[in-house]
Image (cartoon, rainbow, N blue to C red; front, side, top):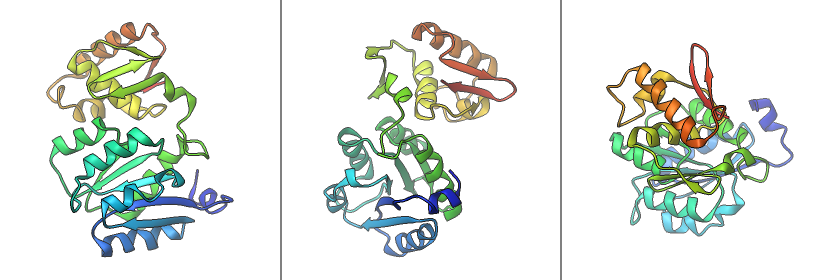
Length: 225
């Protein structure tokens, strides 16, 4: 979906933002409005989560909020609604990023960033959701609950490294992730080689019982089909 396609949608993209910096929220709102995106911001997270989350197409969420941590907000929203979530945070600790993905965030954008990048990431996420805001059926085969991944309703018994890699692929299903990205984004495999990654992917395929579930993209990396 290009920016031109965005502006031609019959209905505007409705974005719920929970951000306690009003100036930053206004900056993003003004920028995104030119692409047919309507942003409603709440500085108070309690008001944000009671604002009819299901009526929005996407949630843009800060982590450092008054009275309620953004991770709690994310976990509650993901549990109750089928809506893509982008974390927008100045918290640079890798543990915050990993925890964001663990509780169900779809993307993590560290501040400061160019609004152009945010716009691109929003479009990328919405491509993987249908018009009603629900994930494509292909994603429904996988579910991440805490530190367990379920495939077609069955729990997979994975090593920490296997969980780390498969969870990345699940959250970016249909998108090719480079070997370097998979390794660098992994807390468990940060010092591992690409050969080790290939072995782990092979073991995951075996546990899925479907050797074609994870496709090798020559010269790039892997993609979950």
